[in-house]
Structures are given as C-alpha cells and as structure tokens.
Amino acid sequence: MSHHPGIFKPLPAEYFRHPEEGGATNVETRLSRLPGYLTPNHQFFVRSHFDIPELKAADWQLTLTGDALSRSQSLNLHDLNQLPRVSVIRAIECAGNARACFARDFGRPAEGAQWGTGAVGVAEWSGVRLRDVLALAGLKEGAFHVRPEGLDSGRFARPLPIDKALADDTIIALAMNGEPLPIDHGFPARLVVSGWLGAASVKWLGRLEVSRHALDTYWNTQDYTLAGPDYPAKGEADGVPITTMPVMSMIELEDDARLPSGPTILRGRALSGEGQVTAVEYCLDDGKWQHATLHTPDIAGAWVCWSLHCDLSPGQHTISARATDNRGHQQPEQVSWNNHGCCYNAVTRVTFHIEDRRSK
Ligand SMILES: Nc1nc2c(c(=O)[nH]1)N[C@H]1C(S)=C(S)[C@@H](COP(=O)(O)O)O[C@H]1N2
Ligand SMILES: [Mo]
Image (cartoon, rainbow, N blue to C red; front, side, top):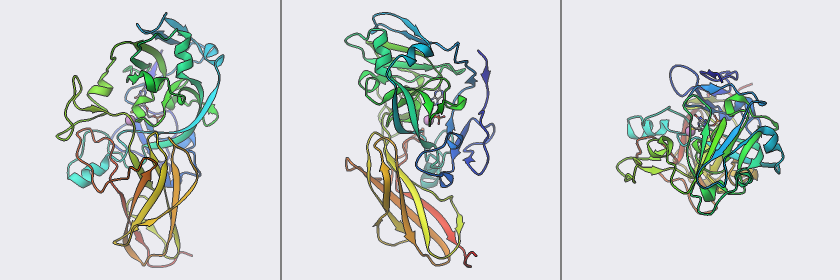
C-alpha cells in the first residue's frame, strides 16, 4: 500500500483557509461560503496527521481482533454491504476548532494548528452500524474498549468505550453526502462517532480491536486531552481525555470583513456535541443580547443555521454570539487555558467593518 503526503482534493482559497504554515495537510472551511445546511464534500475541512493511504476498494480488509471477541475475523466491503444500511446527518468537529482564540484571549498560542472556527462540517454519512460489525465476530460480555485503527502511515487510533461503540448512530461510513467517501475523508471506510471530537472518527479504518481492558493510545492520553493547571492528569494521561464536544456557535464572517452599508443579514451556525441547540443569542457592539432566528433543520449531533437582520452605521463593529443547548449548557464568557488548545467555546466574537458608501 502506498502513502501520499498532503490532501488530494483541490483547495481553492475561496473555500478554504490554511491554519498553519507549510504543506496542506490541514485546511478549514470558510463557513461563509457554504451553500446550504450540509457541507459539500469539496468544501469539507480536512485534518490528517499522517500520510494518506491509497486504498483499493477490492483489496480493502477490516480486521477484527481482541479478547472480547469470540473469534478474529477479516471483513471486506462485500461483507459490510450485507448488513443493514443506515444514514445519519452528523457533524465532525475537530477538538481544536477555534484554537486560535486561545492566542487572542491569553496572549500566547496553544500547541497545534491555529484553527479559526472552520474545523467543522456536517454531512450525511451512510454505512453500517459499528455494533452490527462487531456482532459478526461475536462480541463477548465484559467488553470495555474498542480501538479503531487507521491505515494511514502513523496508524492513527483512538479508543472508544463500549457503550459509545454500540450506540445507534456510531457507524462505519462508506459514503458521504451520497458519494463514496473521498480519499481525504477516509476512503473506503471511516468511523463516524456522533457528537464526539473529530479524532474519534478514525479514517481509512483497517482494524478494530475489542478488549476487556483499556486500549489507550497517544491520541487519548497525550493529545486530544484537556491538560493544564485546571485539569489534573489522570493515570497514564496528561489530562482528561476529550469525549463530547461543547456547545459552540460560529459566525459566517471573516475577521475584518468589509460589508456594504444598508440592511444586512448576518448568519452563522451552532452545534453542541450529541445535543441539540435550542437558542442562539447575539449582541452587536455594546448592545443588548437578542435572540437570533434559528432555521430548520436543527438536528441533534449536527448543527443549526441562524441569522439576524441589522442596519449598522459605517465604521467598525463587533458581533458576539452564544448558543444554548437542550441540556441548558451555554457558551461561557471565558474558558480556562488548556495546553493543547482544545474545546474552545467562549462567546464567539468577530470584528467587521461597514463601508461608508452603499454598494450599487
Ligand atoms: N486515520 C486517521 N483518522 C483521523 C485522523 C487522522 O489523522 N488519521 N484525524 C482525525 C481528526 S483529529 C479529525 S478532526 C477528523 C477530521 O475529519 P476530516 O478530515 O474528514 O474532516 O478525522 C479524524 N480521523
Ligand atoms: Mo481533530
């Protein structure tokens, strides 16, 4: 199997922003350019830690092993296609989404790619339930962790507790928005772990180990953890392993955007891990908090689109937004520092300008 450095799909600057110097292994979506509710495949952000495996559908195999299975098993795409097919509309959000805000708020950058708020996307994922696949190898009582492993050059892997692995909407996706998975997004098969940090949704899936014991990896003990003065280290880990993503809103405005004067609609999106967003409030400059309009659909585990009308005077303005979910969680005024710069969800703020002259 050969591996390829970098991203395959075209990365036009109108759709993507590069959060770091150098090669294009990570790109974020310009949310202001999305045409509708779903993120089209050619606009979906990409986050890959290693070189990408060039896999052929006909040769691909998924190996199941471990002391919590009755037998080891190798499955191919034909085997998976015998199982009931499911489709879910869900977000994938990198735990580092909005990491650049730590540098803004704390005056020093957190480790990692300096993402804006575009390391998130929503797609319709179709495939088979992970629990149906595990059943083919005889899942035993007492299973504790499932460790999915990718076929990329560094064998990216991050364990899942058995309850989450068996959930209705934890799937092995074979298609994204009605097309076979694009290579950048895990062809031919990836996990989609609803509501959890993106790192749980292992791409280019090649192996599933199921054990009665913990199957921790670097990616839930030394990275994708909440680590720092406010988060005590636990066992092997440098902090608290991240699971579900917090409630967060995004504003579809580039920093320092220039808008024509006159009546304007400002838009955004909001999501909350496995939950559903119930309200988005906004505040313009030093004004009062007001409710934005939420649009349908508002799918739990995906996102909701929101908008507001305004007519602002020429000059510089700031919009703040905060979302609330169905469990009563709301974006806080501030977050505490964490070393890996994960799960930023303080009130979202963007500064923009209204031009002096009306556009024609
Ligand atoms: N095999 C493998 N799976 C992976 C990764 C990876 O580097 N290798 N990156 C993870 C991370 S950190 C994120 S945020 C999501 C990004 O998914 P996307 O590239 O399809 O947007 O994939 C996850 N799955
Ligand atoms: Mo990520």
